[in-house]
Amino acid sequence: MKHYDAIVIGAGQAGSPLCRKLANAGKKTLMIEKRWIGGTCVNDGCTPTKAMVASAKAAYMAKHSDDLGVHIDGFHVNMKQVKKRKDEIVMQSRSGGQKAIETTENLDLLFGEASFTGPKTIKVKRNDGGEEEVQADLIFLDAGATPMIPDIEGLKDIDYLTSTSILDLEEVPEHILIIGGNYVALEFAQMFHRFGSKISVLERGERIMAKEDEDISDELKKILVEEGLDIYTEAQVHKFEKTATGIKASAVIAGEKKEFTCSHVLLAAGRKPLTEALNLDKTGVELNEKGFIKVNDKLETNVPGIYALGDVNGGPAFTHIAYNDYTIVYRNLVEGTNYNTTDRPLPYCMFTDPQLGRVGLTEKQAREQGYAIKIATLPMKHVARAIEVGDTRGMMKAVVDVKTKEVLGVAILGAEGGEIMSVMQMAIEGGITYDRIRYCVFAHPTYSESLNNLFLKIEE
Image (cartoon, rainbow, N blue to C red; front, side, top):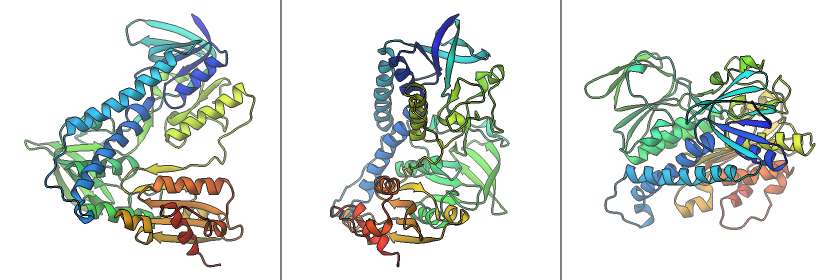
C-alpha cells in the first residue's frame, strides 16, 4: 500500500489548485479523479453554459437589431456549431488543468473511483482497469454534486435531460418542459428559447427565484414572459407518458389539472452530493440528512485530518465558494493562518439576460434580522448607459442600514449586472457608506455611474 502525505479526491475548483499547492509545499500528494479535470464548473457548468449563453445572446441580438438601425434579413442557429465551439472551450480549460497537475512535481494523478476501506485508507478502481489501495494522514474530499432526479411516475420511461446531458444536444428541441424555476432552470430556459425552442417552465413554489426578494423575482419573470417563455408557478408534474408524437406530462397548476405535450423534458430542480460511492461509513465521517458532508467553519469533518470542500459539503454551490474553500484550507494548514468560512461574502450572478448580480442581504433577510433599513430602487430605464445601449430591462436595488449608513446588500438585475454588483461588493467589504457612494465620481457613461442615482433615491 502506497502512503502519501495528502490525498485529494475530486479535481474540481477546490481540489485542482489544492493538490498542486500541497505538492509545491513539499507534501507528497495524490489526486484521484473519477471523470475529468475541472469538475462541474469546467465540464458541465460555468464554462460550457456561459459559452452557449453567448451564442444565444447573439441570436437574440440578431432578432432585435432593427431598433439599433441594423437590419438582418434572416438568420438561423446551427446547434452543431454552437456545441462544437462550446466543446472546444471546455477542452481547452480541461486539458490545461490536467497538464498543470501532470507537470507538478511531487504530485501523482490517478483516474478512477475512490472509496474508503478504513479511516484513512482508500481503494481506487482505476478507469483503465485494476485496483490500487492508498492511504494518507490528510484527505480532502471535493467530490461535487450531480443533478437530482425527482420521483415522478413515468419518468424512467422517457429520455429526460439534465443540466449535463442537455449540453450535448446538436439539434434545437421543438418544445422543452423544464422542471424547476431557479438559477439553472432559468438560464437554460432563456438560452434554448433564443435558439428557437418553445419553453414551458414549471416551478412548484409560489414564484420563481424564491430566495430573492419578491420584486426582483417578479421583474425577472416579467422579462422572461415578455420574451416569450411560458412560466407556471404552483405547478407540479405527477405523471409522464411517452407518446407517438413526443411526451405527455400531466400536471396540477395552482390546483387545476393541465396537460402538456412536449418533445423534451429538462430536470433542473436541484442537485445531490456525490458521497454514496465514497463509503464514508468506513471513516466515521458524518453526513447531514441530505447526504452532504458535515464540516466546521475550517472545513474539517468530525474526523481529524479529513476535510470536505466545494459542493459536497452542502455550502453555497458556487465555483468561487469552492475556490475560497481551497484558499482557507491551504492557508490554515500550510501557512499557519486561522481563516474560516464564517461571515465570508456570498456574491453570485445568474447569467440570464439581463444578468442578476447579488451580494449581501435581501430586503427580506435584513428585516428578519432586525435591521432598521431603507430601500433604494432604480429602474434600468433610468440608467443612461442602458438607454444608449438599447437594453433598459431590469432594475437596481440596494438595502442600507439606517443607523450606520452601510450597504447591507444589493441586487442588480440588468445588463452587466454581475459587474455592477462586484463594484458594490468592494464598497461593502471596504465599509464605504451609501452617502459617499451617491457622490462618488464614476466614469461616464458606465453602468456603475448610476449607483449615484440609485442612492440619491434614499432620503436622509
